[in-house]
Image 1 (tube, rainbow, N blue to C red):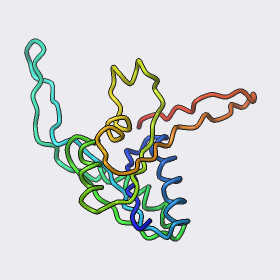
Image 2 (image 1 turned 90 degrees about the horizontal axis):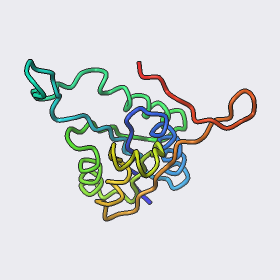
Image 3 (image 1 turned 90 degrees about the vertical axis):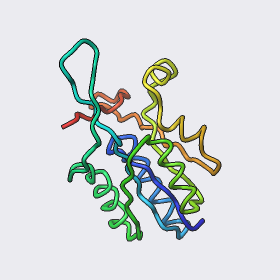
Image 4 (image 1 turned 120 degrees about the vertical axis):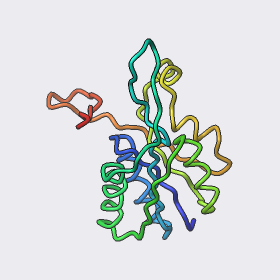
Length: 159
């Protein structure tokens, strides 16, 4: 394996995917290509009933944060990585970029919403699995033990 594409959005599940993907790249002597996808358009509220406007997404410093965090994980392990910020539909952009660079593996995180929530909310990992013509590794968000010893899912507060 020469190239591993690791997708991140900064969520707990994607951070776990980054850690796992970087470890795998290290074991295989592969380059880690870290990818984050931002929207091409931002939805803005407009006056009127049920109408929303759309404007082109302006890339800002915060858009790079998941990539900087992922690159730090790779750097800590001594792995050479490359960061790529893409715009558009996340699953399509991930798959297209993997094809462009000839990635041997795509690593994505999954929050594990379950069938009903995934059907309602959509799932980037599911769409990547459907669209990709190369191996995909889905890393599930791990349950973190609570202080009382019971298992619970860790919730990441958005800031």
